Amino acid sequence: MNSIEKAPETAADRLARALFDTVLVPAAEARRAEHRAEFFPLAPDPAAASYFENLDRGARGETDFPGGGEVEGLINALADYWRAQGEAGLVALAPGLKSLARALGEEGAEGDGSVDPYCYTMF
Image 1 (tube, helix red, strand yellow):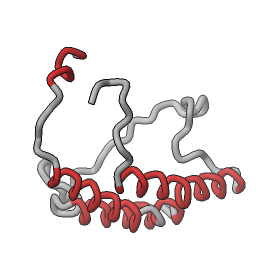
Image 2 (cartoon, one colour):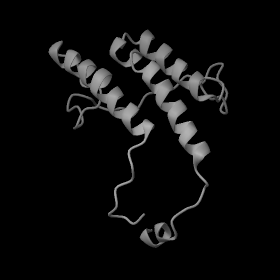
Image 3 (tube, rainbow, N blue to C red):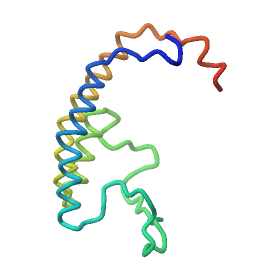
Image 4 (cartoon, rainbow, N blue to C red):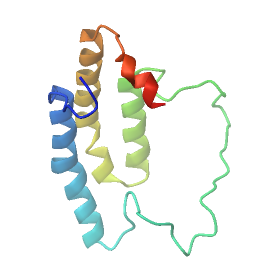
């Protein structure tokens, strides 16, 4: 496949589009209707002095990975965090993210690991 050919649509592509269209867009629209800050603002907040937050390392070690290093565990940890923050719209992403992660894992397992030789000439 060269750079102008379109890759065939995969199950992961369809799942990602569905997740965006059926969960993320409605959640963002609801948030906008409530006059709350956007999930992913297109510009910095002029009222914010900084986006830096001091993190409390507490019991968490430097090498700890939320969810025990497993994709599903990470998604569960994200959902727990979003739930604690009151972000029901983002919590609703969790089941779709799990399906998407499984589909991407299956696609990765199906691949032969080869890389197009022209890929390196682009960088």
